[in-house]
Length: 132
Image (cartoon, rainbow, N blue to C red; front, side, top):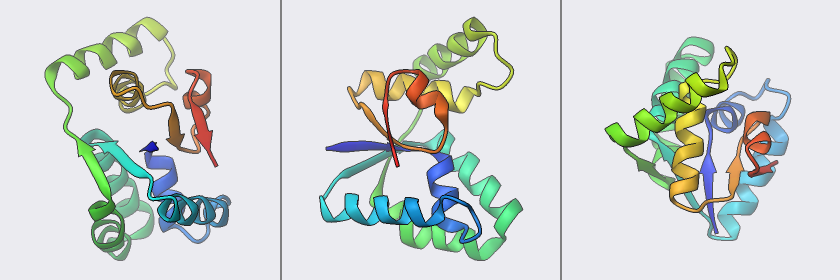
């Protein structure tokens, strides 16, 4: 099973004060035991690094790099996926739907991934199964 990993889940794993930290930790450990494949995008990683550094500091950035990044396959967004994500943002016409999320949805569809490790309800609104 392959799971797409979103910024929201990664930040929750890094931040012990995040309300879903414990639940995300349980899901992460369960997925590791099941030998799940983890995929994310370089857009998600940039967003996660920025949030972790700003909210939690450089120790969180180091933990992200040392503990999580080696377990993730990073899908590097090309111009076609970027354009499809941008078209989705503009078509949705919602201020609260990000380019990063729309690119994530596009990657998931192209790779036939139906599960997302995310705290963002937009994934379920797009028809994906959301963990936790």
